[in-house]
Amino acid sequence: MKFPDNLRDPALINAAIDKAVRFEWPFNPEEAIRGSGGDDLGFVDYVRLSFLVFGHKIQSLYYTYFLIFGVSAAVFLWTFRSRPALLMLLLITSAAQTILFVSNIFASHNLGSISDPRFLSILAVVPGLHLGCLLLDRSPPSITNVASAIVHSIILVFAFWIRASTIWASWPLLFLQVSSWFGVC
Image: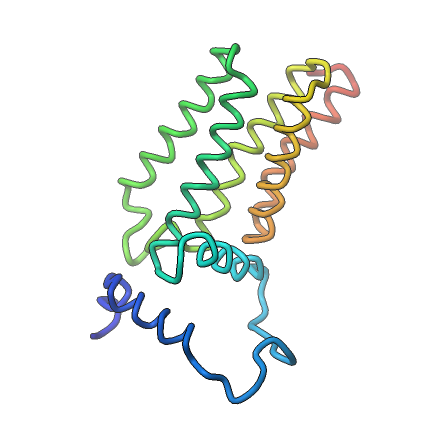
């Protein structure tokens, strides 16, 4: 099969993954191996997590994306369940992602799929929104607020680990925090 058709055949990709999993290395792959450079080193961990949770198949990368997004949305929903205006922000964010899925962004000449590390930085949107709402809300610390902030901080750090350009999600949070110190927000 020729490029780019080979990138659209899940059976072919899964067969290649299965072959790679069973490959016998002439050396110990846990030692003295250096991967490629770059700032997306966490993508390897994303793939490892995907394969650990959902098995060695290309679909696992998609399932992991939706699992992380689902957990993030559920935590947001639980934390702000009595705040309809904030829940509307989650609805708008979810609708925007749905629009992205049907857009041309995943054409083969663009990202190709949601498993592209350039797209995975989207996983930081809901955690960033959640932490921003907590900063603006100024509600007293509660078990729910602290626990949800911890969960979303972990997801935010993981998104940053997958794609370093996700640092964009921290700038608005820093701005909100500094603004609150000066009474602007």
